[in-house]
Length: 288
Image 1 (cartoon, rainbow, N blue to C red):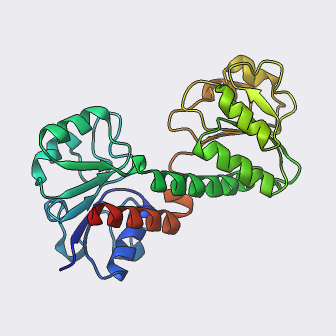
Image 2: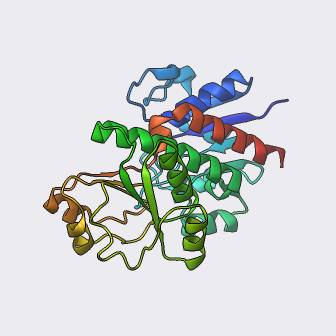
């Protein structure tokens, strides 16, 4: 007998996930989708589809919670359910598989103490890599939409050389941009040079920024402060992909530099592909 799924909260990716799982023949209880079009895929934020309640969704064999799991104050990232994650943990059974993204350390500790199988799917490397690729693809869309110019021959700087940074360099280079990358780690800078790109030290950017027309940050820590931003050309486009902003947004605004802090891009720009990645990850953990 096939497992039942509860999909609780999230963005358009969650609604697409519901559709994919149902297409695969699973019974899915959907609750709390946050969508631009409230009727898309038959899932409404009022969560009245087929009489599904939060309790019904939380009682499924496998429950898929959003990424990020909760807001900074611990409230579940789910429209219509003003509950802290700590409040809903006692509603789960130890036999359930519970998946969520970017689980705070304290929530993970509480779940472990309760004997719950709470899995952070963003720590699963195949998903992390696939999500990084989707983020890079979506980032190019944001760059094109915001600048209204082709990326070919644009002088671009990518800050950080983790999963997303590597893929941003590859994607930008693939469309003909003139790409350089910056990293703090000497090993990363060696890899950047080995790939034929100029390598900058992310901790020593002073005097190296004046020629870039676009900067894409992937480092979740302060990296471009007001002094650094003053070096950039006045029309330089800034894109921050980090979970915690690395570019001083107030300074950028004062200087008139266009800045987009683009969190959760896969769920907003390529939700169908992001949902397929999450579906495959959920089924992987169910098989285990």
